[in-house]
Length: 146
Image (tube, rainbow, N blue to C red; front, side):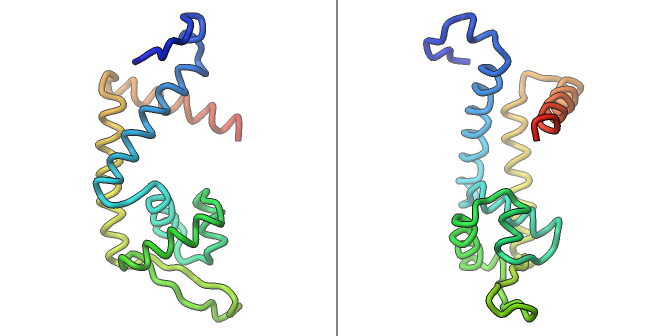
């Protein structure tokens, strides 16, 4: 890991180390998704639809952790590729309901594989047990701070 000129005392702090690893993780995942002609937002929205079912664009953004201003553009891109369909909500004609298509579900499975490759590259120096422990500890920290 490159120190980028940071002082040794800083390079020993958990916050600095987490940030350094996060930079590498973001690069690996972004490059992997780009190779599949996708972005992180595409993955988030498809995974959210797969897990929770059809949703309004506003609910989709909230559940998927995607800003409302980015949801519209990402849904447009996914719809152009046939990965999602939009339909007017019969209960409120001002809203669209977004649904994942069979092609979208297949693309999501492909992105899951791409993500797994990125995770393997990121965690390459760790054993399976160490990976599980790292995920457990990071999950505990994330839950505490959410």
